[in-house]
Every structure is written in C-alpha cells, then in structure tokens.
Amino acid sequence: MFWINIDKPTKTIKIHQANCKYILKQESSYKGLERELRDGGWFAIDSTEQAQQFFYYSYPDFKRRQCNACKHEA
Image (cartoon, rainbow, N blue to C red; front, side, top):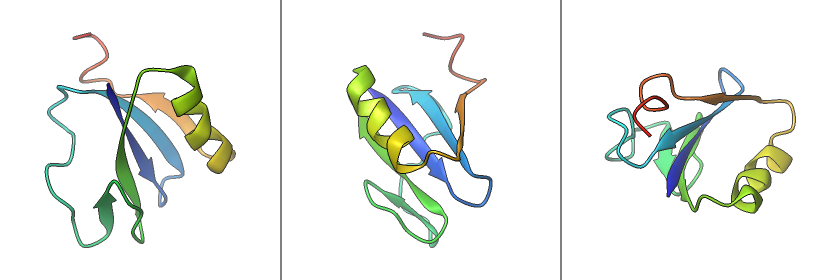
C-alpha cells in the first residue's frame, strides 16, 4: 500500500510508502484524509499502476514525485 498526497498549492502529487513519517495522521483544516479539501488530500492506494494512474489522470498538470524521506527505506 502507498499514500498519495495531492497538493493543490504546489500542483504536486507525491507518493509515500505506507510507513513514511510524513503521512498525515489526521485531517487538517485544508487537507483531508481520503477526501479533498481546499488544499488537496491524502489517499491510501494499493500498489497497482492503475490506482496511481487514476490520480495522474485527474490531475494531468501536476508534477509527480516520490517522497525523498521514504523512497530509500522501501
């Protein structure tokens, strides 16, 4: 499982490993868990390419990134 962070202010989609320390533990005022708020949201997805492509299709102009903190821990 992975987490995807949709960040609207920076127009970025960032993928995090399930154990990443930067994954949001609770909703903030502007970013939701499993739902979008004003600044975006965090979504748990399975590891299939199809799950990732859904978000890439929904936000075609957003940059795609991997978390620098957790990508080396995988």
